[in-house]
Length: 478
Image 1 (cartoon, rainbow, N blue to C red):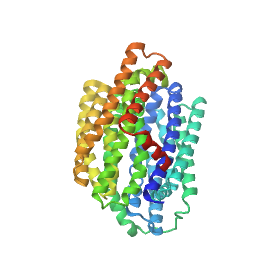
Image 2: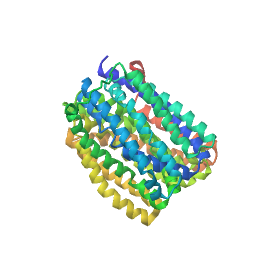
Image 3: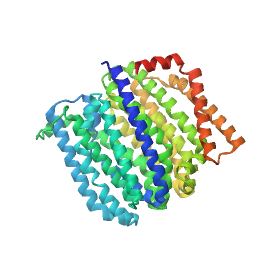
Image 4: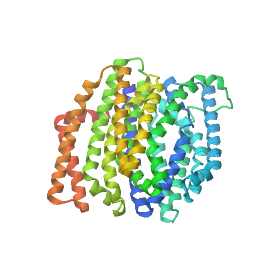
């Protein structure tokens, strides 16, 4: 099977995984929004903030270096495996001992048991993580999809059952741990033919992986701080309840981005890594990836912007109406992030993760004072707007780095961008007209808005972007 066929086949499986996991996560959030208070989401948000920070240190970018170097040496892989396990144990111990100090800082008693339970993630995830890297390297996306689907289904059922049983915020944490346990077990089972760890620890043989990981680690730390400075500011100054509103709004607005983009990027990176010296080929692939991401993400973001006041009460209930204006702001964060993501694949393909480090460093220098100033002046809305401005600034720098890596591309990008943007403007206008004539207060009107917007965008795409004959040919390939 050629790389192109593997990419198409991989895309099918990752798409299936993404659709199923998206549906289950969507249902989970909708159910929990009616069972838990905003403060419960805020407490879990703080916990995820802490776990996410320590998680940056955990794999040192080994996933990217293994794929980039096409690593297969058993001694090297075994060393990386045991190194990850050791780091996971150390992180577990650090969080257990630091939990009281963190709880004291936030003055939130519920946070202690949440943190202590969340830290078990580091004792679970690294048993199977290396197997996942190898499955991706070998383009075995059917196995990857099977693991993700099973984990999300079991985790969602566990979370909702516990929430109904009165476990409150702990239901989210236990559900995540159960999901990861299932994933780790399946990773080992499905990946064991690719690797069996030996009792070897030759640190001298993984120096190149460690060097590759240094900038990746630095980029991860800066990226984490850059992405979560607003969450930290809200939780420490405005409280966990406001963080709950902010977190739920952000999750809904970037939902299309964090679920759809990996379908393309997860499949693309192992393929591009095999053509890392072909600049023209990489440029064409980069533009194609951007084109696909734009046509998938832009209508979802535009649709969410115009239907937010109808969708939020329907999905979350009336208690969450305070998130509507935040969701409409975060739509623009989603747009700029969508256009930024492919650089990560391109940078790792070219073996230059250091560029991502410098990008996040510059962005961080701009974001922290901007979030602080606008947060004090305009509260949670000011923080959301500052996030939009920083994401736009990051995108401009992002495109400069792409130009450095593969040459001039902006003209072709703008030509490709205009079409889906125009389709979205028409779609938004049609939905706005419907709302002005009929209103938007009922579930029938909400469904009608979504259906009308979808039909408008799909119709324009079939008329001006993809013909029926091209769709038929694509179906035959798939």
